[in-house]
Length: 154
Image (cartoon, rainbow, N blue to C red; front, side, top):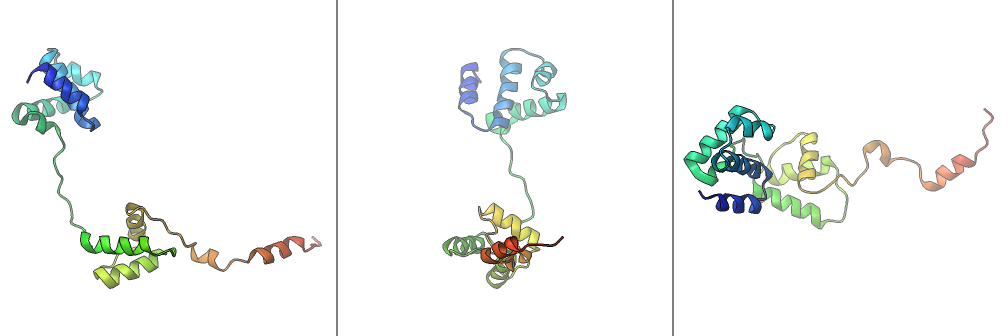
């Protein structure tokens, strides 16, 4: 690959990890730098440099991008998750994790721990809008003002 092509790809790339790998390839292939020296300048290890240079040699520029990683599929299907998220967004009320869990159990037939419900809400761009149970039954403003005005003997 010609130096100008690599430099163009480097400038155009938005993923910082791929950009760093392109810089490694530029330094080694076009500037004639030793891979260990280029890795040291990038604050990376020699095996890291060797791995990415080998992938570049085999697969070209596409080899510098991260591959998809397999993982455990979610219990809640994306379609049902989208429906639940839309329902939560459309309503004007606040939601507790218990209420969201009830909706998930009813629609998706999946049981999650309340801490996971909290992370799901965060992932969906939502927050718990309802205060915790211990704060629900606090005194009203008037009651608090009256309490402040009471003269204490101690």
